[in-house]
Amino acid sequence: MISRHLDAMGRVVIPQEMRYKLNITHNTLLDITLKGSKIIITKSGESCAVCGKTGDILEGAEVCMDCARNIAERLAQK
Ligand SMILES: [Zn+2]
Image 1 (tube, protein in one colour):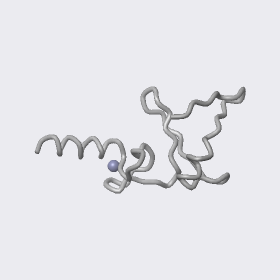
Image 2 (cartoon, rainbow, N blue to C red):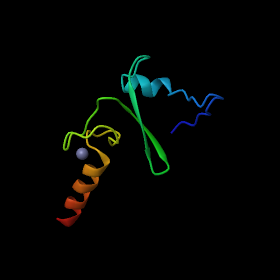
Image 3 (spheres, rainbow, N blue to C red):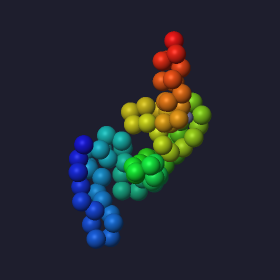
Image 4 (spheres, rainbow, N blue to C red):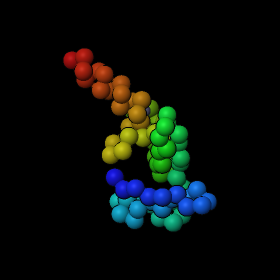
């Protein structure tokens, strides 16, 4: 985790190593979602491999939080 201060305009710089890892360049469109008390930023156009929903994609996976929760519940039942 990296902590950054917002500037006076409400902007924050996404750390270079994170941008590089996710192939985010100066022109990449990002989706910003409010989930409870968290602000989630995802590359626009990324969608869940299960349901196709865009945004709210679990970091490091290709599924949305809802599908990840469903999968985890199903695995817990077995
Ligand atoms: Zn999904």
